[in-house]
Length: 313
Image (tube, rainbow, N blue to C red; front, side, top):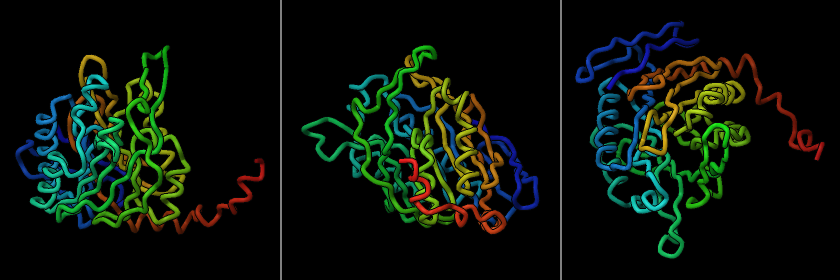
């Protein structure tokens, strides 16, 4: 398990440097700014092994000074079939999320967990789930549950991509207000939500300073679109963007792109976990730098009234 690359960016004087020790050693950011940890992992259908891997990542991140840790979509598991995916699903008060609430409380760290395979409200009758992004605070309390609104139904036959999330997933019905955390106000999305700028714009208008898109992007779509979409969301909203990611082969049928990223409000990549290894990128969140950018380029103030943008309808 590797720590990801050193960080560079616009904030806190240009180049930010991390000292690296072996995984078992403590890693500290040399700054008083709050630290976020964006994680990259390779989930399988084995829930116990996945929890063990995530626990190690969270412990490593907190040893390095992180006050909030971001895990990717499918952190709990990635099934090899519809039947396996549904069989392994749980409710919010089930074993997996209970373990994470205990972990957050033990380490006094905030956790972003998304997306979790949450059994739907009418599970006994329809056997359908939500793709849920859960925030847990340092006291081990669930403070927000966003259910993914845009489902990935895509047939890219020339690229070998065929997924229909709606076959077993219920789309969420609404956005949720950004949540005040130790690193700033965090707005929640999940994976495919990244392609819909209306979502990020709405979250920014309601106070988001950090947007987060935990993901399991395919290799084909990730290679073409992942970084450019994340940087676009950061630039147009003048927010930090944190995108934990799955990487590598989950089973014989599915492989993910990786490159868990953290991006600043100017569009600079602060941390990138690469395309092959499990790891953690530690990033400093400079909210004063964010507010300076918004002051100097007040994009939100320059937006026109809703009627202007709907004048072609």
